[in-house]
Image (tube, rainbow, N blue to C red; front, side, top):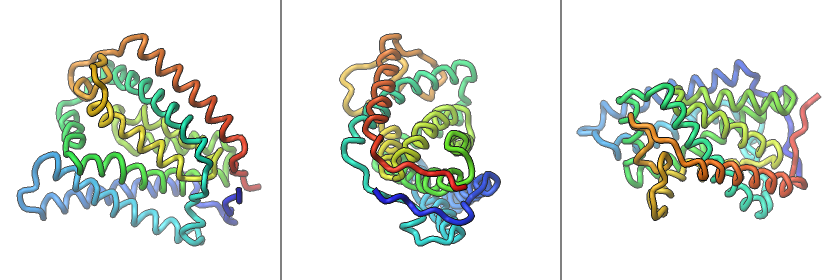
Length: 279
């Protein structure tokens, strides 16, 4: 596989990466505010999810375009979409499902220690209950634009400046902080580490986008396909004031799936591209 091209002065450094994320958050808030004021009768979950789709496309799109221009590379060279062997995706599915179970329990623990405010719980419920608009916002748009910025630009730049472990950790920390609340930040931090390692090992955004989308889709998949209720895991028990912990057997199953998936991923990625740190 052809290695992605490096740039003479890797962009961004840490302070610049934080600036990119702050710009996204400011633009997101501005777009949502303008849409809520300009669309007559804009109320309910479907409207909110639709606003988030537009806000993410506009805010991330503008910031990504500016960052790519700053990198001084053509778009397709700046954002690596190298082909990855299909054998990678099976282990990736196992890994994401395992981490989904474990991070669901971590979310339960966070909400047990720090009860979620009702206004925030209601916001999460609305974002997740807007039908097709929610699916588009959470499972399609968010994974694509977040991976383009966080892994494709920020982590790529960090890998040219820092040791791989440091680069992956810093990008994951930024990814967690970007969510602006402890109820999502812990899961985002862990998944940022997994997706950052995946990007480093594969040199491609394709598996990162796929893994991110699958992780975000688990709530929808559980609601639609799981024929029985698992305490503390099904969506109706999440983001409410009542905290239920998952059965121990289910947590152990998540741990086994995550470990098995990572082991299989490591084996599948041995021959894939690896990012070299610039001297």
